Image 1: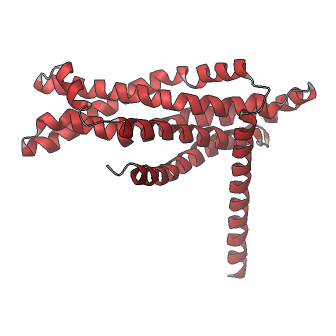
Image 2 (image 1 turned 120 degrees about the vertical axis):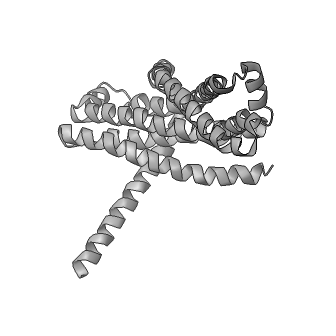
Image 3 (image 1 turned 135 degrees about the horizontal axis):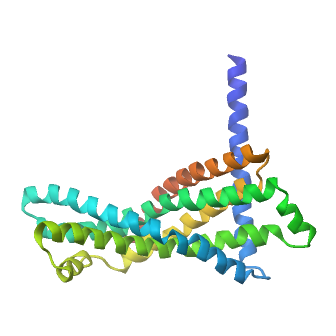
Length: 261
């Protein structure tokens, strides 16, 4: 019994120490991001790699989610003769919560795994050590640029996901009822204001920071060869998704406090 308690306590201490190291790592990245010199070219390249190349995944997922949500919404609202509310319900649900959360979770899978595996591979093959031997700040060049790129890319991907989902919802609805796009568009945004759009979109900046800092920490500190790289990639996805969900709960409560209407 004593051994079980000791092992549990050791595991808790290890987990807390790791969480603390991740927090320090992320804060260091934020501070370094606003201090010169700025790796602008590499940051733009990472935005292209992490953001632009994710558009196909985001667009396909957005269309699919929009179609599915439209079908489920119709099956619920037609019981009350409220089919005309389908665009409004879909628009509010997508922009306020579903779009940012699904985009964040999709990004935690693609971007988190990619960053963790890439930096982990560079660490175990001593490429990071080679950069440092050339007097290159590896942390700023490899980690900070990815953190900034994710924080910029996530809001843009969220907007693209929302647009794709609304188009998918219209496609499903017009197939069933022949609803025109103009009518669907007007009703989808009829009850959405800046207090809905801006906070829900900007919170994905936090999602981007969490994904990039966690996966960057795990990849940058990877060890153990190919197995260590695989573990860094897997843990990046899992921890990024969990932290994103927890942060979303906190931020939703905070947004509702600031914008109670």
